[in-house]
Image 1 (cartoon, helix red, strand yellow):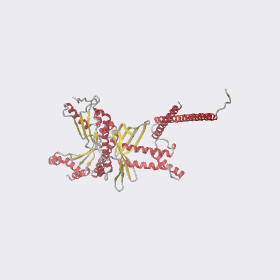
Image 2 (cartoon, chains in turn brown, blue; image 1 turned 90 degrees about the vertical axis):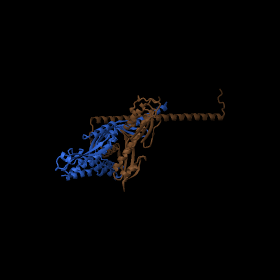
Image 3 (cartoon, chains in turn green, cyan; image 1 turned 30 degrees about the vertical axis):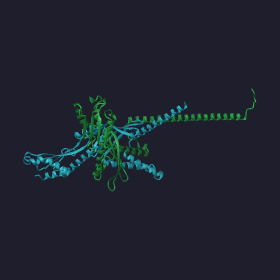
Image 4 (cartoon, rainbow over the protein chains, first blue to last red; image 1 turned 120 degrees about the vertical axis):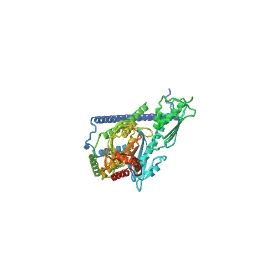
Length: 289
Length: 287
């Protein structure tokens, strides 16, 4: 081996640069590894902290519930609670009662120049849309803003009652809104749960008081022998006033009888419930032949 | 390897934070529901709170808004109660289930609408979907004195079956208004013509008897029924029934037999109070 062989100066520098680069890389890698270790340690610590807090809260809640089971409705000692706590408790209680008014159908709050009413709607136990009415009371009662859809005849109702009897105005408006929402709900439910018995999408207007669709009471068929036309003449009602069920002119008598029976059914029962009563076995309809 | 451990920790942190949030809400809800302060205690707190705060910072700023907030809320509440006629005398609620998307609360509500009192128990389910919060009532139980009115008991059981809390309140409101109107009208006539007007069933009954003390066995009965149909619609129906001794009947058959129809026309033209007043005056003149 030849020691002290002269290396060209470029080679040495290049070698040194390479070493420097490698050292740099190693340093960066080490820094990254340490950073990740630190991050992991931090995360682990946070997890521990949260676990502890969660366990403490859980114990507190269990204690509360145990205490509640043992003594229901005990009036607590006010001296234990600061005035602020008592006030906050009372505020929450009043807010809670105001929320119950929402469930009654008419709620609202006073505004600077009048009242802002909220009319809530529901179908049986399911609460649906709410509508807002901002009323001004000076110099006379008038509607400032509202969220009532235009196809509800609110202007007519207002003309009749708003000046003389606000309560009656709200009551009649509420009847219209609840009936509209009820009709819409029935149509939506029919479309959602019985689409296999309907031919395509049913036709309806925005007020949902005219529905036209072709259907088959049994779900196991390819044809839709019945055409239904439901007219809800009373805008405050969610049952139709006029039902026309028709089938092909050459249809067998049994079909015509069924059409008559259905016509009566749709007049008495909510649409989706009527379809529900057809059953899964279905009233078998021999449509094709 | 390390990065997956990192992710696992992050996931656990997120789920723990969610758990802590739910537990905190549950704790606070339990605190709210288990504790009860009387009105005097609340008033005392308001006063001491205000003094304490004014002492500390010259009475201006953030927490004094608490008192203003309470006053504004109470004004809203008393307005609503006066406007709708519905007063809640007691409201207890208890959170039965609380998860990220579902809250179930049990409510017990006592109150009255004008002079009719009610007691309700129901479960309120709130579900959070992507777009909105849906509210559903289940297990509705209604106690209301029907006063023997079969309409009312039928309506109540139908409403309970479908959980139609909203329909219950709206119908109750309208029924109670008519009930109150009838009660006031009966009271008014009884006070004005104590000798002629009799209320065998009292003010809560649905009829009054008119008789002239000088003419025996001649009675007019005005029946005022308030019908409540299955949908909850209220319809007041007034009718006149006559109790006439044979001889008087023979002499005035046409008049007596037409009396109910005439009463109905009077009702349509003049309204209940004026129609009844007219009848009473006519009776008074009868010798």
